[in-house]
Image (cartoon, rainbow, N blue to C red; front, side, top):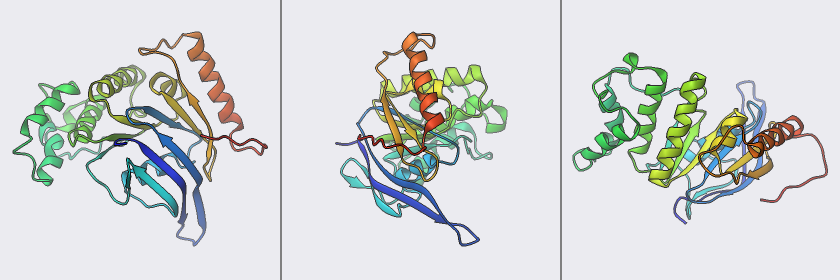
Length: 259
């Protein structure tokens, strides 16, 4: 299925400059349905961002395979959009040129020029096309980064803590923007976050990871309808459940979860 994602027995290890082997992922099996919103949550350094890098094709597994649809992921491609915590905009380009940069590189700008204005409007940056990144707030720069990732019409949008550096009010507004874009574009979204409330607010499924070497501790389905009330008793119950799992994640227990 186009837009569906699968991690099949994925392990990833690194060798440090001192020659030490570090196991980031200790074996991950996960299937993500097309059009779903999945949040990856776990301790810092547990391998969540590594999973996104593997899915983006920026790195390759030591063992196992990552799939997008029926295609094996081996390299970056426009069918996956990636947004980092830092917007990483080109400071010498205005917002319009930052967003259209990928189309120009792929020599598609002339035939898809109208897409640039469409996505500028989609992320709420109409009127700021000629502004440079240093003239905008962090939230507005992150909107530009989202538009740049979306303009390639990806099957999956990969979000590596894109809201982590924003103030609380802007962060909540951006969470609603992500939900609006996801509904309008009907794409698969995978987001790394350390914020439990954010995961419960956004996700259809929450994947809780163990400390490194990371494995999946538990997958939680969130059945709350959108928009979600953060004071809803079920919202609070899910938050408490995830915090409890995180406190015990990775500790030795004779429990095995099947996904």
